[in-house]
Length: 369
Ligand SMILES: Cc1ncc(C[n+]2csc(CCOP(=O)(O)OP(=O)(O)O)c2C)c(N)n1
Image (cartoon, rainbow, N blue to C red):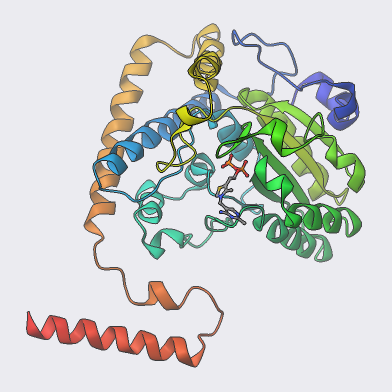
Protein backbone atom coordinates (compact mmCIF):
# COMPACT_ATOMS: atom_id res chain seq x y z
CA UNK A 1 0.00 0.00 0.00
CA UNK A 2 1.19 3.57 -0.72
CA UNK A 3 2.76 6.03 1.69
CA UNK A 4 -0.42 7.97 2.36
CA UNK A 5 -2.40 4.83 3.09
CA UNK A 6 0.26 3.73 5.55
CA UNK A 7 0.13 7.00 7.41
CA UNK A 8 -3.62 7.52 7.36
CA UNK A 9 -6.72 5.58 8.02
CA UNK A 10 -8.41 5.85 4.59
CA UNK A 11 -11.82 6.01 6.25
CA UNK A 12 -10.62 9.10 8.17
CA UNK A 13 -9.03 10.68 5.13
CA UNK A 14 -12.06 10.26 2.83
CA UNK A 15 -15.14 10.89 4.90
CA UNK A 16 -18.40 10.47 2.96
CA UNK A 17 -19.90 13.80 4.00
CA UNK A 18 -16.85 15.63 2.64
CA UNK A 19 -18.02 14.60 -0.85
CA UNK A 20 -14.69 12.99 -1.75
CA UNK A 21 -14.33 9.91 -3.91
CA UNK A 22 -11.29 7.76 -3.31
CA UNK A 23 -9.20 7.30 -6.45
CA UNK A 24 -5.74 6.05 -7.36
CA UNK A 25 -5.83 6.10 -11.19
CA UNK A 26 -7.34 9.02 -13.07
CA UNK A 27 -9.27 8.42 -16.29
CA UNK A 28 -6.01 8.44 -18.27
CA UNK A 29 -4.50 5.73 -16.11
CA UNK A 30 -2.21 8.21 -14.35
CA UNK A 31 -1.44 7.74 -10.66
CA UNK A 32 -3.20 10.38 -8.55
CA UNK A 33 -3.35 8.49 -5.23
CA UNK A 34 -1.55 5.76 -3.31
CA UNK A 35 0.03 3.37 -5.82
CA UNK A 36 -0.11 -0.10 -4.26
CA UNK A 37 3.07 -2.14 -4.22
CA UNK A 38 2.13 -4.85 -6.67
CA UNK A 39 4.65 -6.74 -8.78
CA UNK A 40 4.47 -6.74 -12.59
CA UNK A 41 3.33 -10.36 -12.36
CA UNK A 42 0.46 -9.44 -10.02
CA UNK A 43 -0.56 -6.54 -12.27
CA UNK A 44 -0.54 -8.85 -15.29
CA UNK A 45 -2.62 -11.38 -13.41
CA UNK A 46 -5.15 -8.67 -12.52
CA UNK A 47 -5.36 -7.62 -16.14
CA UNK A 48 -5.80 -11.24 -17.22
CA UNK A 49 -8.77 -11.66 -14.87
CA UNK A 50 -10.34 -8.40 -16.04
CA UNK A 51 -10.19 -9.58 -19.64
CA UNK A 52 -11.27 -13.11 -18.79
CA UNK A 53 -14.31 -11.69 -17.00
CA UNK A 54 -15.18 -9.37 -19.92
CA UNK A 55 -14.76 -11.93 -22.70
CA UNK A 56 -16.59 -14.68 -20.77
CA UNK A 57 -19.39 -12.17 -20.18
CA UNK A 58 -19.75 -11.31 -23.86
CA UNK A 59 -19.70 -15.01 -24.68
CA UNK A 60 -22.42 -15.76 -22.12
CA UNK A 61 -24.73 -13.14 -23.64
CA UNK A 62 -24.09 -14.61 -27.08
CA UNK A 63 -24.80 -18.16 -25.81
CA UNK A 64 -28.03 -16.95 -24.21
CA UNK A 65 -29.10 -15.35 -27.51
CA UNK A 66 -28.44 -18.69 -29.24
CA UNK A 67 -30.65 -20.49 -26.72
CA UNK A 68 -27.65 -22.23 -25.15
CA UNK A 69 -27.95 -20.52 -21.76
CA UNK A 70 -30.86 -19.34 -19.63
CA UNK A 71 -31.18 -15.81 -18.19
CA UNK A 72 -27.76 -14.30 -17.53
CA UNK A 73 -26.71 -11.20 -15.53
CA UNK A 74 -23.89 -9.46 -17.43
CA UNK A 75 -21.08 -7.78 -15.51
CA UNK A 76 -19.40 -5.58 -18.16
CA UNK A 77 -18.19 -2.39 -16.48
CA UNK A 78 -17.75 -4.04 -13.08
CA UNK A 79 -14.33 -5.59 -13.73
CA UNK A 80 -12.28 -3.13 -11.65
CA UNK A 81 -14.67 -3.58 -8.75
CA UNK A 82 -14.51 -7.36 -8.97
CA UNK A 83 -10.85 -7.95 -9.64
CA UNK A 84 -9.52 -5.14 -7.44
CA UNK A 85 -11.51 -6.27 -4.43
CA UNK A 86 -10.91 -9.98 -5.03
CA UNK A 87 -7.14 -9.44 -5.09
CA UNK A 88 -7.35 -7.88 -1.62
CA UNK A 89 -8.79 -11.08 -0.13
CA UNK A 90 -6.87 -13.71 1.82
CA UNK A 91 -7.69 -17.37 1.19
CA UNK A 92 -9.28 -17.66 4.66
CA UNK A 93 -11.68 -14.74 4.08
CA UNK A 94 -15.25 -15.44 3.04
CA UNK A 95 -17.15 -13.85 0.17
CA UNK A 96 -20.93 -13.54 0.21
CA UNK A 97 -22.06 -12.46 -3.26
CA UNK A 98 -25.28 -11.26 -4.84
CA UNK A 99 -25.75 -12.39 -8.46
CA UNK A 100 -23.37 -10.18 -10.46
CA UNK A 101 -19.95 -11.26 -9.18
CA UNK A 102 -18.44 -13.37 -12.00
CA UNK A 103 -14.99 -11.81 -11.66
CA UNK A 104 -14.80 -12.61 -7.96
CA UNK A 105 -15.69 -16.26 -8.58
CA UNK A 106 -12.97 -16.51 -11.22
CA UNK A 107 -10.25 -14.96 -9.02
CA UNK A 108 -11.26 -17.17 -6.12
CA UNK A 109 -10.73 -20.22 -8.32
CA UNK A 110 -14.17 -21.29 -9.47
CA UNK A 111 -13.93 -22.68 -12.98
CA UNK A 112 -15.86 -20.86 -15.68
CA UNK A 113 -17.81 -23.94 -16.79
CA UNK A 114 -19.30 -24.17 -13.30
CA UNK A 115 -20.32 -20.50 -13.43
CA UNK A 116 -21.88 -21.14 -16.84
CA UNK A 117 -23.64 -24.22 -15.45
CA UNK A 118 -25.38 -22.05 -12.88
CA UNK A 119 -26.73 -19.78 -15.62
CA UNK A 120 -27.72 -22.84 -17.63
CA UNK A 121 -30.02 -23.71 -14.75
CA UNK A 122 -28.01 -26.51 -13.18
CA UNK A 123 -27.74 -26.74 -9.39
CA UNK A 124 -24.22 -28.10 -9.86
CA UNK A 125 -23.23 -24.55 -10.72
CA UNK A 126 -24.15 -23.53 -7.18
CA UNK A 127 -21.63 -25.91 -5.62
CA UNK A 128 -18.38 -24.26 -4.63
CA UNK A 129 -15.37 -26.59 -4.70
CA UNK A 130 -13.79 -27.33 -1.30
CA UNK A 131 -11.33 -24.68 -0.20
CA UNK A 132 -13.13 -21.78 -1.89
CA UNK A 133 -14.64 -19.68 0.87
CA UNK A 134 -17.51 -18.19 -1.11
CA UNK A 135 -21.27 -18.70 -1.06
CA UNK A 136 -23.35 -19.41 -4.17
CA UNK A 137 -25.26 -16.77 -6.15
CA UNK A 138 -28.05 -15.18 -4.12
CA UNK A 139 -31.03 -13.94 -6.09
CA UNK A 140 -33.33 -12.52 -3.34
CA UNK A 141 -32.10 -8.93 -3.37
CA UNK A 142 -30.28 -7.90 -0.18
CA UNK A 143 -30.86 -11.16 1.71
CA UNK A 144 -27.21 -12.20 1.49
CA UNK A 145 -26.05 -9.20 3.52
CA UNK A 146 -27.42 -10.98 6.59
CA UNK A 147 -25.30 -14.02 5.79
CA UNK A 148 -22.35 -11.65 5.47
CA UNK A 149 -23.09 -10.23 8.93
CA UNK A 150 -23.53 -13.74 10.37
CA UNK A 151 -20.31 -15.21 9.00
CA UNK A 152 -18.44 -12.07 10.09
CA UNK A 153 -19.93 -12.49 13.56
CA UNK A 154 -18.70 -16.09 13.78
CA UNK A 155 -15.22 -14.90 12.77
CA UNK A 156 -15.32 -12.22 15.48
CA UNK A 157 -16.51 -14.65 18.15
CA UNK A 158 -13.81 -17.15 17.21
CA UNK A 159 -11.23 -14.35 17.09
CA UNK A 160 -10.25 -15.44 13.60
CA UNK A 161 -7.80 -13.35 11.60
CA UNK A 162 -10.22 -13.48 8.69
CA UNK A 163 -13.01 -11.28 7.34
CA UNK A 164 -16.17 -11.55 5.24
CA UNK A 165 -16.75 -9.44 2.15
CA UNK A 166 -20.39 -9.17 1.13
CA UNK A 167 -21.63 -7.68 -2.14
CA UNK A 168 -24.97 -6.04 -2.95
CA UNK A 169 -26.34 -3.50 -5.38
CA UNK A 170 -27.64 0.02 -4.81
CA UNK A 171 -31.17 -1.41 -5.07
CA UNK A 172 -30.48 -3.75 -2.17
CA UNK A 173 -29.97 -0.78 0.15
CA UNK A 174 -33.76 -0.27 0.05
CA UNK A 175 -34.38 -3.74 1.43
CA UNK A 176 -34.93 -4.36 5.14
CA UNK A 177 -32.21 -7.00 5.25
CA UNK A 178 -29.54 -4.43 4.39
CA UNK A 179 -30.50 -2.31 7.42
CA UNK A 180 -30.71 -5.33 9.72
CA UNK A 181 -27.33 -6.56 8.56
CA UNK A 182 -25.63 -3.16 8.92
CA UNK A 183 -27.07 -2.58 12.37
CA UNK A 184 -26.28 -6.08 13.61
CA UNK A 185 -22.74 -5.94 12.23
CA UNK A 186 -22.00 -2.59 13.88
CA UNK A 187 -23.53 -3.52 17.26
CA UNK A 188 -21.80 -6.91 17.42
CA UNK A 189 -18.59 -5.63 15.78
CA UNK A 190 -18.54 -8.40 13.20
CA UNK A 191 -15.64 -8.93 10.77
CA UNK A 192 -17.80 -7.87 7.82
CA UNK A 193 -16.99 -5.56 4.94
CA UNK A 194 -20.12 -4.37 3.12
CA UNK A 195 -19.45 -3.71 -0.56
CA UNK A 196 -22.14 -1.81 -2.39
CA UNK A 197 -21.91 -2.16 -6.13
CA UNK A 198 -23.50 1.18 -6.96
CA UNK A 199 -23.94 0.72 -10.70
CA UNK A 200 -26.68 3.39 -10.57
CA UNK A 201 -29.59 1.16 -11.60
CA UNK A 202 -31.74 -1.51 -10.02
CA UNK A 203 -33.20 -2.90 -13.24
CA UNK A 204 -35.02 0.26 -14.48
CA UNK A 205 -34.94 2.20 -11.18
CA UNK A 206 -32.20 4.86 -11.20
CA UNK A 207 -30.24 5.69 -8.05
CA UNK A 208 -32.12 9.03 -7.59
CA UNK A 209 -35.33 7.04 -7.13
CA UNK A 210 -33.65 4.53 -4.85
CA UNK A 211 -32.43 6.81 -2.07
CA UNK A 212 -32.65 10.45 -1.00
CA UNK A 213 -29.15 10.22 0.51
CA UNK A 214 -26.44 11.96 -1.46
CA UNK A 215 -24.25 8.87 -1.24
CA UNK A 216 -24.64 5.25 -0.18
CA UNK A 217 -21.40 5.57 1.82
CA UNK A 218 -22.93 8.13 4.20
CA UNK A 219 -25.51 5.59 5.34
CA UNK A 220 -22.67 4.04 7.36
CA UNK A 221 -22.72 7.02 9.75
CA UNK A 222 -26.18 6.18 11.05
CA UNK A 223 -25.11 2.64 11.92
CA UNK A 224 -21.89 3.67 13.61
CA UNK A 225 -19.34 2.26 11.20
CA UNK A 226 -16.95 3.94 8.76
CA UNK A 227 -17.90 4.34 5.11
CA UNK A 228 -16.22 5.54 1.94
CA UNK A 229 -17.17 6.27 -1.67
CA UNK A 230 -14.68 4.87 -4.15
CA UNK A 231 -14.23 5.13 -7.89
CA UNK A 232 -15.44 1.64 -8.78
CA UNK A 233 -13.83 1.82 -12.25
CA UNK A 234 -10.38 2.22 -10.71
CA UNK A 235 -8.92 -1.21 -10.00
CA UNK A 236 -6.09 0.11 -7.81
CA UNK A 237 -8.46 2.18 -5.67
CA UNK A 238 -10.69 -0.88 -5.30
CA UNK A 239 -7.71 -2.99 -4.28
CA UNK A 240 -6.41 -0.46 -1.72
CA UNK A 241 -9.70 0.29 -0.05
CA UNK A 242 -10.87 -3.31 0.13
CA UNK A 243 -7.54 -4.36 1.62
CA UNK A 244 -7.76 -1.54 4.14
CA UNK A 245 -11.30 -2.50 5.18
CA UNK A 246 -10.49 -6.25 5.33
CA UNK A 247 -7.34 -5.65 7.41
CA UNK A 248 -9.39 -3.51 9.77
CA UNK A 249 -12.06 -6.22 10.10
CA UNK A 250 -9.47 -9.01 10.55
CA UNK A 251 -7.87 -7.13 13.40
CA UNK A 252 -11.14 -6.91 15.33
CA UNK A 253 -11.92 -3.25 14.56
CA UNK A 254 -15.35 -4.10 13.15
CA UNK A 255 -17.35 -3.63 9.97
CA UNK A 256 -17.24 -0.91 7.32
CA UNK A 257 -19.15 0.10 4.20
CA UNK A 258 -17.61 0.68 0.78
CA UNK A 259 -19.63 2.30 -1.99
CA UNK A 260 -18.04 1.39 -5.32
CA UNK A 261 -19.40 3.92 -7.79
CA UNK A 262 -19.62 2.44 -11.28
CA UNK A 263 -22.02 1.80 -14.14
CA UNK A 264 -23.75 -1.24 -15.59
CA UNK A 265 -22.85 -1.05 -19.28
CA UNK A 266 -25.09 -3.92 -20.39
CA UNK A 267 -28.50 -5.31 -19.62
CA UNK A 268 -29.70 -5.89 -16.06
CA UNK A 269 -30.12 -9.45 -17.28
CA UNK A 270 -30.64 -10.88 -20.73
CA UNK A 271 -34.41 -10.47 -20.10
CA UNK A 272 -34.04 -6.69 -19.84
CA UNK A 273 -34.21 -3.93 -22.46
CA UNK A 274 -32.35 -0.90 -21.03
CA UNK A 275 -33.22 1.29 -24.05
CA UNK A 276 -36.68 1.60 -22.45
CA UNK A 277 -35.34 3.51 -19.45
CA UNK A 278 -31.97 5.09 -20.21
CA UNK A 279 -30.42 7.23 -22.85
CA UNK A 280 -27.77 5.72 -25.14
CA UNK A 281 -25.72 8.92 -24.71
CA UNK A 282 -25.35 8.11 -21.00
CA UNK A 283 -24.18 4.58 -21.83
CA UNK A 284 -21.70 5.93 -24.39
CA UNK A 285 -20.27 8.37 -21.84
CA UNK A 286 -19.68 5.51 -19.38
CA UNK A 287 -18.19 3.31 -22.07
CA UNK A 288 -15.44 5.93 -22.34
CA UNK A 289 -14.73 5.31 -18.63
CA UNK A 290 -14.26 1.57 -19.23
CA UNK A 291 -12.23 0.19 -16.27
CA UNK A 292 -10.25 -2.13 -18.53
CA UNK A 293 -9.12 0.71 -20.80
CA UNK A 294 -8.05 2.75 -17.79
CA UNK A 295 -5.97 -0.06 -16.31
CA UNK A 296 -4.52 -0.81 -19.75
CA UNK A 297 -3.27 2.80 -19.99
CA UNK A 298 -1.58 2.42 -16.61
CA UNK A 299 0.03 -0.87 -17.67
CA UNK A 300 1.17 0.71 -20.92
CA UNK A 301 2.83 3.55 -19.00
CA UNK A 302 4.69 0.88 -16.97
CA UNK A 303 5.71 -0.85 -20.22
CA UNK A 304 3.79 -3.97 -19.24
CA UNK A 305 1.09 -3.71 -21.90
CA UNK A 306 1.73 -3.84 -25.66
CA UNK A 307 -0.52 -4.54 -28.68
CA UNK A 308 1.21 -7.91 -29.11
CA UNK A 309 0.63 -8.81 -25.45
CA UNK A 310 -3.05 -7.95 -25.85
CA UNK A 311 -3.41 -10.08 -28.99
CA UNK A 312 -1.79 -13.10 -27.34
CA UNK A 313 -3.82 -12.74 -24.18
CA UNK A 314 -7.10 -12.36 -26.08
CA UNK A 315 -6.30 -15.49 -28.14
CA UNK A 316 -5.42 -17.48 -25.01
CA UNK A 317 -8.61 -16.38 -23.22
CA UNK A 318 -10.82 -17.19 -26.21
CA UNK A 319 -9.34 -20.68 -26.39
CA UNK A 320 -9.83 -21.19 -22.64
CA UNK A 321 -13.47 -20.10 -22.90
CA UNK A 322 -14.10 -22.43 -25.84
CA UNK A 323 -12.99 -25.36 -23.68
CA UNK A 324 -15.03 -24.19 -20.70
CA UNK A 325 -18.16 -24.02 -22.89
CA UNK A 326 -17.48 -27.57 -24.10
CA UNK A 327 -17.29 -28.75 -20.49
CA UNK A 328 -20.46 -26.92 -19.50
CA UNK A 329 -22.35 -28.29 -22.49
CA UNK A 330 -21.15 -31.84 -21.90
CA UNK A 331 -22.86 -31.77 -18.53
CA UNK A 332 -26.36 -32.84 -19.47
CA UNK A 333 -27.50 -35.21 -16.75
CA UNK A 334 -26.92 -33.70 -13.30
CA UNK A 335 -26.48 -36.24 -10.51
CA UNK A 336 -29.68 -36.65 -8.53
CA UNK A 337 -27.97 -35.32 -5.43
CA UNK A 338 -27.80 -31.86 -7.01
CA UNK A 339 -31.49 -31.22 -6.42
CA UNK A 340 -31.80 -32.63 -2.93
CA UNK A 341 -28.61 -32.65 -0.91
CA UNK A 342 -27.39 -29.08 -0.88
CA UNK A 343 -29.93 -27.22 1.25
CA UNK A 344 -29.83 -28.90 4.66
CA UNK A 345 -26.99 -30.52 6.58
CA UNK A 346 -29.23 -33.58 6.90
CA UNK A 347 -31.91 -34.35 4.34
CA UNK A 348 -35.54 -34.33 5.48
CA UNK A 349 -37.38 -37.65 4.92
CA UNK A 350 -39.63 -36.14 2.22
CA UNK A 351 -36.53 -35.04 0.30
CA UNK A 352 -35.06 -38.55 0.59
CA UNK A 353 -38.30 -39.99 -0.79
CA UNK A 354 -38.29 -37.57 -3.71
CA UNK A 355 -34.65 -38.36 -4.47
CA UNK A 356 -35.37 -42.10 -4.46
CA UNK A 357 -38.33 -41.55 -6.75
CA UNK A 358 -36.17 -39.58 -9.18
CA UNK A 359 -33.44 -42.24 -9.16
CA UNK A 360 -36.04 -44.95 -9.81
CA UNK A 361 -37.46 -42.93 -12.72
CA UNK A 362 -34.00 -42.50 -14.22
CA UNK A 363 -33.26 -46.20 -13.84
CA UNK A 364 -36.46 -47.30 -15.51
CA UNK A 365 -35.77 -44.86 -18.37
CA UNK A 366 -32.25 -46.26 -18.77
CA UNK A 367 -33.58 -49.85 -18.66
CA UNK A 368 -35.98 -49.05 -21.51
CA UNK A 369 -33.24 -47.48 -23.65
C1 LIG B 1 -36.46 -9.56 -2.78
C2 LIG B 1 -36.41 -9.40 -4.27
N1 LIG B 1 -37.19 -8.48 -4.87
C3 LIG B 1 -37.14 -8.30 -6.21
C4 LIG B 1 -36.31 -9.09 -6.98
C5 LIG B 1 -36.22 -8.87 -8.48
N2 LIG B 1 -34.95 -8.21 -8.78
C6 LIG B 1 -33.88 -8.94 -9.20
S1 LIG B 1 -32.53 -7.99 -9.37
C7 LIG B 1 -33.34 -6.60 -8.93
C8 LIG B 1 -32.64 -5.27 -8.90
C9 LIG B 1 -31.42 -5.30 -8.05
O1 LIG B 1 -30.73 -4.10 -8.16
P1 LIG B 1 -29.42 -3.84 -7.38
O2 LIG B 1 -29.54 -4.30 -5.98
O3 LIG B 1 -29.05 -2.41 -7.59
O4 LIG B 1 -28.34 -4.80 -8.08
P2 LIG B 1 -27.84 -4.81 -9.59
O5 LIG B 1 -28.84 -5.61 -10.35
O6 LIG B 1 -27.75 -3.41 -10.08
O7 LIG B 1 -26.51 -5.49 -9.57
C10 LIG B 1 -34.68 -6.89 -8.62
C11 LIG B 1 -35.66 -5.87 -8.18
C12 LIG B 1 -35.54 -10.07 -6.32
N3 LIG B 1 -34.70 -10.87 -6.99
N4 LIG B 1 -35.58 -10.19 -4.98
